[in-house]
Each structure stands twice: as C-alpha cells, then as structure tokens.
Length: 163
Length: 88
Image (cartoon, rainbow over all chains, first blue to last red):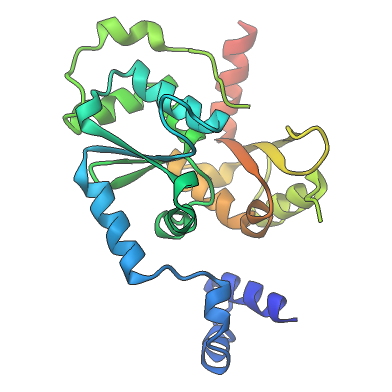
C-alpha cells in the first residue's frame, strides 16, 4: 500500500495532488526514495569537475567488471582520450557512490560518462555517439582530444560489444 | 518477481505512440536483462539523451528491478533510413 503511494508520487508530474501529503505525514518514506545526502552530492560534483572526462563504471579500465563498462572504456580508448584527462570511479568499490550517482544523474544504470561536468549518457548513448561522430565532436569541443579526424574515420561502424 | 517483456511492452505502449517495438530478453529468460528498441514519433526533435531519459522514466520501476538494461531509440524517419541503408 505504501509502495503504491510512492509510485503515485513518481507520477506527480501529472497529478501533483498527493505528493505533498505523503512527504508531510510520513517523513520516513523519504528514505525509500533514497534522496542522496548533500555530502554525497558535493563529493560527486567535485569528482565530475575534477577532470574533463569522468567515467563511473564497474571495475577499472584494466579490469572492467561488466560488459557495458568495458564497452564504454573501449569507446573512449578508440577516441584517444589521454589518461591525464580522464578519471574513472569504480562503483563496486563504493556502494554509496553506486546508489548516489544514479540519483545524482537521474540515470538508472552504470556506466555513466561526464565531460566537463556535464552528463553525457550511458553505454548505449556513448556507442550511438561514437557511431554518429558526435562523440568525437564533443571531445574535440571539450578540448579533450585534438581536432584530427581523418585518422579516426575507420573507427566508424565498430563492433558493439554490449549485448 | 522477474520483469517480463510484456510488462515492458505495456508500459512503453501506454506512454507513447509506437511505430515499432522490439524487446529482447538478453538474460536467457530470468528477466534480469533487457534490450529495448523503440521507434516512435514521440522522439521527434529530442536528442538521444532526452529520448533515453524519457524511456528510463517510463520504465523506472522495471529498470530498478533489473540487472541490466539497454535501449535504442529512433524516430520513424530514422528507422526508415536505417532499413533503406541495410537493404541497399
């Protein structure tokens, strides 16, 4: 019963009538929605602005623990993102981060890519953008990689390792 | 309680006009991993991130119960172009 009440509040965009009542009468339900703490928020904010490219993933670039994370690392590698401009965070090492990054980005899955503090997307989006050329464009614009395309053109239509 | 492809299909169809929909269970039946391909005019004028956020919102409760979720979103025009490209 409570659960259905929570769901109702998710769809509050269309029917905002009940949501405030829930928040007032039962503050403990706030935990059910897992609001992230200000501290966690600050930590993530700091992390995503510390380096031009930030990837939240499962495992490390050397030893990814999930095919989606592996694909994300490979795509960034194809584009020649230099190591000094990129930082990865292993969410398996930090269960609080694993949860809070989902809330922070409003994105339900890992990996998650940030460029210059802006959320870019997850694995599907990265691969999409890689294939369409948008990723290269974004990385060049962000000053992460130098603007030299011809060499990279064979990267088009690469295998999709997610799946 | 595993998520079924029908749950996903119903949720998607209820939320937007669907031109084409493919839902693939990539978990060999345990309901933990799904890959979804949606073609809808609702994506017109939205970039990929916005489209994916839209689908994430529509399937919020389902995705929270899965291990992995992958999606592909095209407009009808993009889909036609893709088919034309593949068959040429």
